[in-house]
Structure formats: C-alpha cells, structure tokens
Amino acid sequence: MPDTAIRAQNLSKRYRIREVGLRYHTLRDAVTDIAAAPLRGLRALTRPTRDSERGVVWALQNVSLEIPQGEVIGIIGHNGAGKSTLLKILSRITEPTSGFAEVRGRLGALLEVGTGFHPELTGRENIYLNSAILGMRRAVVDRKFDRMVAFAEVEKFIDTPVKFYSTGMYLRLAFAVAAHLEPDILLVDEVLAVGDAAFQRKCLGTVGEVAREGRTVLLVSHNLATITCLCNRVLLLDHGQIKAYAQPDEAISIYLKDLPAVSPDDLLGRSDRSGSGRMRFTRIAMCNGQEGSEVLRSGDAATFSLGYVSTDGRGLRNVLVEIKVTDALGGPLVTFSTALAGMSFDELPPSGVIRCDVPSLCLAPSAYQLTIQCFVNGELADLLPSAAPLTVAESDFFGSGKVTKPRLHGHLVLRHSWSLQ
Image (cartoon, rainbow, N blue to C red; front, side, top):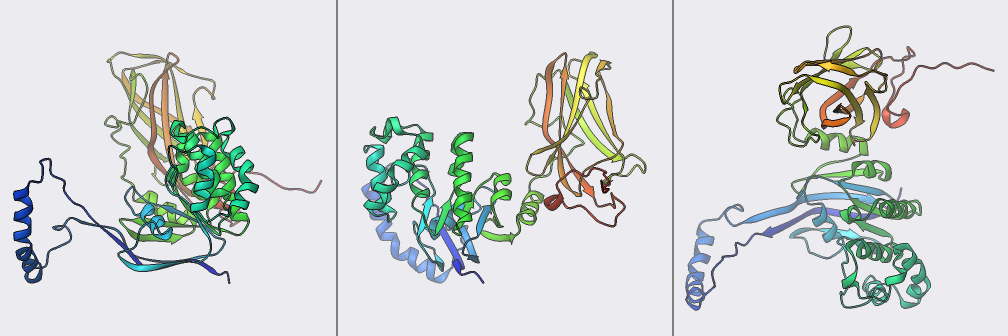
C-alpha cells in the first residue's frame, strides 16, 4: 500500500470580516472604544453571539482526507469553496483555526503569480532568491539554471528587473523555478490559466512528468478537461466542506449537476449569446423519433426542434443552422449541420420551428450539452453555448448485451463487424 503523502484531520479555517469605515478614527473614538471594551467583554460572557453577527466566514470546515504518495489529485469547486485556502494551509502560508495537516516530503508550491519575487531584482537574481526560499541549494540551482531559463523562455530578459516583465513572463519564470525544485509534493493553483495556450501545454506536460516520476500533485483548476486528463481522483469542495472525493467522472458529474439549471424552453432571456441578432432561437426540444419520449437512448432515432424568431418581423433568407453536441467539459463530439448536409433554408417565415431528424443517435450513455448557432446570408446571427442538456440513456446498441462506457470506449458508438481475413 502506498505511503501517505498528505493527511488532514478536521481541518478548519475561519476568517473575520472587518468593516472599514470611510471616516477617520479620531482620538475620541479611541477613548470611547477603550471605555466600552469591558462592557463588550461582559456581553460576550452573558450573551453568546452567532458567527454571522460577528462577521465570521469559514473558508474550510472539518476537512479530513488522506492522499497517497504518487497520486495526482484535482481540486474543484465554485469560487470561494476553499480550494486556495486548503493549498495555503498545506504549504504553511497560513495556519488552520482548528485541526491539523501532515505533509511528508519536500513541498513545492505555485499558488500566485510571482510569489516570492522581488520586483527590483533581475530575473537571474530572483531565480536564486526564490530557489533559496524553496530550499534549493546554490549548487543545484547552478546546475539547473539554464534549463529554468529555457523553460521560461526569458533568455533575452534574464538580467532585466522583473518589474518590467509581463504577467506571462512572470508566470513562466515562477513555474520554472517551482517545477525544477523536484519536490516530493507539488501544489499548483489556478495560475496556469494566465499563460498562453503553448505555455499551458508545456506546464501540463511538466505536471504529467512529475506525476509519472511518482511524486504527488495537487492541482486546483476550473478547467475540467485538464482535471479529467491528469488526475487519479478529484476533491470537490463546497462552501469549505468536502462534497465528494472520488474518481474524476463521478466528482465532476456531481459538480455539474449543482450548477444553475438553464431552461431550454425560454432561450430569449439568455445573455451569454453572440451574433448580429437578425435571428434568435427561442426554444429547443428533443424527443425519441419513434415513441415521442424525451428519453433519448443510444442508437435510437432522435428529433431536435429549434424554435426561432426574426427580430425585425420580416422573413429570413439563406439560413444555415447547426447543432453541436459537446461533452460535459465542452469538448465537441458531433455536429448536425445544414451546410454539411448540403442544404440551406432559402426562405423562412418570421417565426417557426426548424426540425432536425437523426436516424440513429450514436452517442454512448452519458450527459452532454447542445450548442446551437445559425447564419443569415453568411453572417452569424445567433450562437448559444450550452443551450440545453442532453442525457443519453443506456441501450443494447450492438445487440451483444454489453453497454458502452464513455471513459473506457469513447463517446461515439458506431456499428461494425469483425472477421478473419
């Protein structure tokens, strides 16, 4: 059984919110506060106050978990769920209000852009300074210095004060130092989202290499696709408490179910759409093509109906429509398109319903999202991401008694046969 890298027991962290007044604190205010202090203490003894009255917020509440050595753990949750607070406690930046956490091994943390960097020092000087803070000996830094600089891609600016660096350059240099520390445990917060796509791929590759070397990684991210690809297990936090600690698919499914529901029957009120507005989708409905049921099964016929309206009350010409099926993380899987089908609606009335018939829904049983868009005379008129959820139920698609699973077999199911040639 693998050794435990991190163990937390009843870990809690409380913050007190203090209101800051807009006026000056005068001498009379100070004298009044001193005179009233005994009375406030007496009130506290005779009448206990609630946390909400005292302006107290619990960032973490009774968090207990064990993380084995060599595991890659993703940490997800809404903003303010306590993800960053947990990492700050584990990295000893802040102390818990109650409970304790044991961390076994050298720890490297990248929690905020440029943490530990001095703006007046050059990139070279900050590498040595930050490495010393993280516990790396100078001889080791000398040996790895060129690799750090090459990874950060700041060779031309290495002797320039970092106060002149862009946010991306700051981030690359900070991550380069943390990654080359070769820690037993690496804590990474959402800071990777700041870099460009190429740098994010490089960082994720480094995280993957650290994991393959048997080290422990805790990764906080809102990018669920990254969490799914890299992590063995996922910790879901909700208002400072553990809501799930499970396999990525299970934890992410619980997280997505708690997101505010979007009604597909009233799309006009959506504010997250784009396009010229010449044409707007009003509703989307789906049903089983044979039974008229809203339960769609893998392999069955399916019908998608899109309600629309012309915003100026006139008819529409040369209209193209697309329905894109994405996975729960937003990755595109399949597109139903009038253009791909080799047709367009030359004339449409000011309002109506556009229907798309799919003879066989070749999707594995899982939860999906539908993104819809339309073009009028070649111009994007309306685009609605995640316009409606799509749930595909299990079926014996192949007639073999086996049910496909997206994580093992992929999201698409296609009929095929085997023979010996």
